[in-house]
Amino acid sequence: MRGVDRMNEQVTVILATYNAEKYLESCLSSISRQTLRKFRVHIIDDGSSDGTVRILKQWTEKDSRFRLIRVHRHNRGLTSTLNELLDTCKTSYTARMDADDLMHPGRLKKQVRYLNNHPECSILGSHAIDIDEDENIRQHRDVPTDPEKIGSVMPFANPLVHPTVMMRTRDIIHLGGYNETYRNVQDYELWFRAQSEGLHVHNLRDPLLYYRVVPGHGAKRGLRYRMLDARIRWHGTKRLGLGLPVRAASVSVALCLGLMPGFLKPMLVSIRSKVDPRHSRKKVKVIAGKEAGKTAKEAHIK
Image (tube, rainbow, N blue to C red; front, side, top):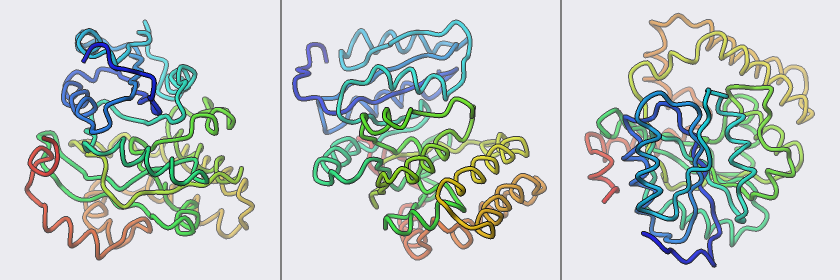
């Protein structure tokens, strides 16, 4: 798609890659098939040792909307790389994407339209659909859509699915971008900071992302991860001016998840829709039952 007219571009998709060869082609294809035709994709590879860079160079040669900004010699981490990407964005909106996920074809158009029509909103996420290695649909990943519910859920669970998010570029840059003190959970810290500064956070009910969940997905969220999560919750709830009982409860959630024996975690996942404050229980049951067994391609990706 060489020579795309960039006069009316409103959104830049930022993509940090690291050893993403296995699913990268599918990810980039899903971005290229957006019903919104005018957008930019800025990519930084964070020190990959597989075939990721080769795939990225092929895409930048065949589609002028895709731009490989730079290739790191060594891995610097997601937080730092996201800030590098933010610095390259000159469009009104910036959309996050992960290299193993798939975009719903209408994602960018729906989010751009919503932000154009809701100038009060600075950060916009959406529901997502969990898929496995073969793109089979497993379940819906609900998040609260009512702004008040987003605020009430914030101390106890991350109310946004990070790779679904589209943000007003100027607002996020004004906040200082992602906090590089945190190598992980950087999105949750940013949402706390945004809310404390009075920025409006919304979610669309439409599932606009296919979120890849593979075996071992939860293994990275061990005690060290949860200790960092607890630290972010403690400081974030303080920023929001919440009382000590709520702050303590918020931290306790993270620590309990970190200390939970591994054999109990699959059971927790199986009852997530009943215990997770982000989930609309009735909606998850109905939609997941309707689409169970489909692949992402059969459901939406044409």
